[in-house]
Image 1 (cartoon, rainbow over the protein chains, first blue to last red):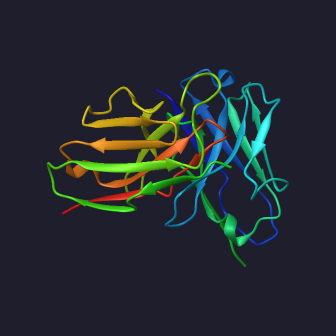
Image 2 (image 1 turned 45 degrees about the vertical axis):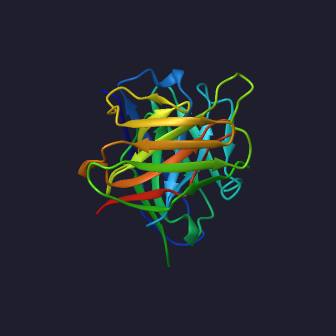
Image 3 (image 1 turned 60 degrees about the horizontal axis):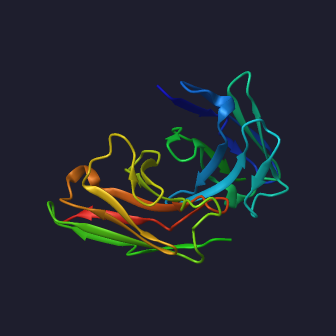
Length: 113
Length: 111
């Protein structure tokens, strides 16, 4: 079975940093583009970032470009999201997704003083 | 950026009746490869999103045939026939033609 398991969410102060991880199994990770999508409390879905299968190409939403960095380790079948200069508006559940057929359960990031 | 606009934002449906959700794109979702990357996802309360339909009308394996998608270009529709209690949740359209973006979501409730 395909599984995506996110971790790393936490309460962090504004301006702080966090690194999210998404460990995958059940499919050939290195063959697929991967994405991060977030959902603020009570709000809709927002695409955050994507990375191609070998990690050579990345894209970001305007609201996170320059602050967030997506990466992957194909040997470890793991996707990452490095988040810097965090703001209150980054508070959300962050989902790892093999767009769009498989999603993780999400990890909660709370940015608050 | 491609903006997706869903209507209605909320739908109250009687069990066994049909529901319809519209998704309008700010520009054509026809990709240069000939495909239209418009999908529909369901998010039940407390759950991650679940893909129902991709490329306008292709149902994912295991999705009941009560769910159907249609449309072209900039206008798309998700129809749910014979609504059941398990269909309660929020439905999102999503485009993957130019990066990715989502509609605002439509909350489906049962009368």
